Length: 61
Image 1 (cartoon, rainbow, N blue to C red):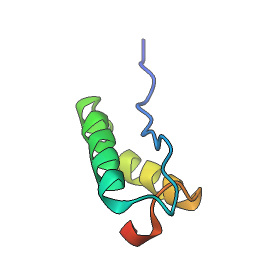
Image 2: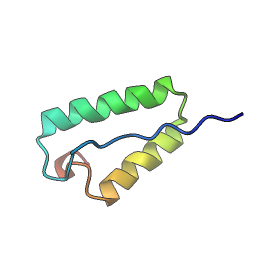
Image 3: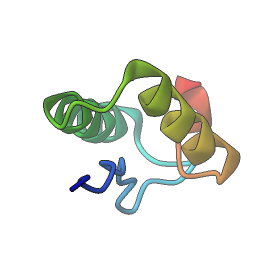
């Protein structure tokens, strides 16, 4: 039985979100992804998708 892959959540982040809150949020989500044994390449792919979907602050890219 395989478990579902952990999905990094952007909550209400946008490319205009305040940077300190965004860093805190994304750090927490990456830590959860690591705790759920999500491989580094999948973490990177998910953060890239957040950037592409404008759900990641542009000043942090």
